[in-house]
Image (tube, rainbow over the protein chains, first blue to last red):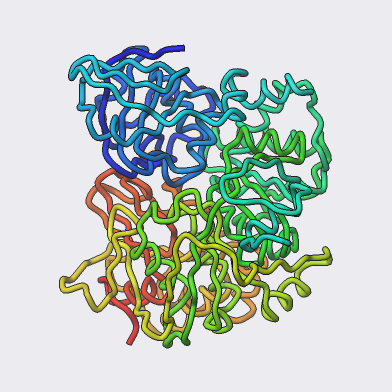
Length: 162
Length: 420
């Protein structure tokens, strides 16, 4: 499995309140919810993202509220993978549980610039920066989590075990 | 020979049926309680609908608390509550709390005796870590984890390593749990405890009330922590006996348990502390503020600071004084029981006479839901837990986090300050 697209870069401590502000949390339709993805820190986000694009951020991505709406709107808006130096732990669980690929990689987080063209090989955890002609080794998932990812989320994983 | 474990590791080992666990190990643990609210439960209920087994594992071990946007703030939040209400009814959920019985979840569940020492608890709300104050392992998760928990009564965890905070000394007047936790977050940063437990120990803990401890454990997530946990002492046991008929179990960290880092917090040295926008780690003590920071609003409430101690402190400061002209002071008792007690003690009268408003329990303004939303350029001193961009309203508004004492004094003076 691979991801390929343009990288969009954000800083440290991107919280789930800016990923999807609470004023929209009563919305249950995920497409409608995704219209507001990232709007409090990047009002152009929804307009500029093409399907397959990649989000790159610094430390502690997804901190704050446990709202699963956050990884969901990122996924629905077309992002194929989030690369960060570290993820906040609830966001990390939620992303895996809903099937949004994420990779922890300090080097990629630091080296990739806004609008670099990036390709990711999920099986090997390798991240290729086509613009800079560089490659970075991401942190692979533990086997147990790979099971959830292969099943495309926790619910399918539980159904398969049932 | 048994290997040493932290308090958190001991609770996790017991719930995984293992004699020993170590940091980094993946385990599946039995849960004593699964929690959700009106924002996260509808998402979990939809996930449960996709499961082969649609039954709940135990109707007595699920708590559904309608608290974020209720009494319903709009049609969409009404639809969400209706979805949860119908689910609770269909599955005969014992602990479903709606208008009239509800309170802010993390104040309500300990008060109702649903969380006790030794429990393993997950909740689809990041501040679920609050119950660590009672000596339980509790942590926030998302809606899909909540759905899996409701169906199976289990959750997977990566066993955390821990940071130890050795609490010493006795706090000065007006210093509360909020100052302790803001001080810690300022010291280690918003990801300082990422993936790890924050274990509080030391003889200074006896000077912290249960409400102080709830406030401290509540904001462990604001340092990135998986959980925050306190040892069980006579004060905890008194609280548990008063509120719960459930048996509890006391776990103690081994003397030679391993910690990644250790810090000592001398309570006697702490000063009133404020987190500046837009991260909880941006702390200053009030005496370090050398400018006049005028405020438009003061909020006293939330799962962090809406308990009886907090309201008593606010009333002490607001008694026979007036909220400054141009400041809106909003006070939100966290549960119906706290509200009632505040009424019986005459606190509500003090608040209303000072010019503050008192609301029914709700998370409301803390997350920018309703009941005190900020306009562009407005500034609020708040006893809540997050001051992220746009958290309480407009993207250009500002939230300063502080204790009830600082929020109340600031409401009277019209700028950020601490009581003398």
